[in-house]
Image (cartoon, rainbow, N blue to C red; front, side):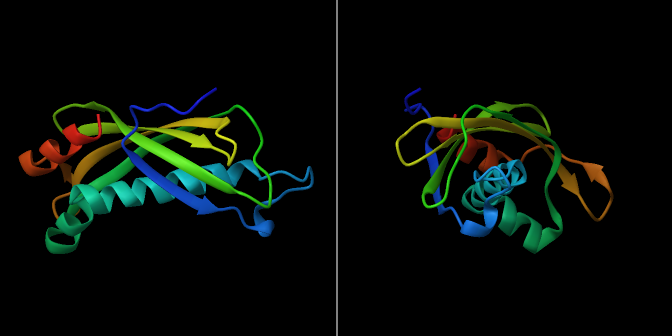
Length: 138
């Protein structure tokens, strides 16, 4: 399957030999780590990381899911393309597509996050500035 051109946020990571498993392909737990790297990139780009650093209010991952389509191998790279799946009052999702160097879709993933105030231990509405940034990646 060809890359989805709607995805606006892209991150390419080098596959390390240590990520291989007994079957000589990338172990499934590493797909989750790749999605985590893309999620952290989004936290930084959207302003969520700065918001947390300044106020202890930020995004908290509440769910993550990955469907495996094709194995990844060393040597090589994985490119994670990420877009906003949905926005609600205080929650949003990130949809990920993971590709190998040949552009083959190797996995799809979905993260659900909620805006969370770590001071009061309550959710809060997505701030308007962050909501506007999210629109760029829909």
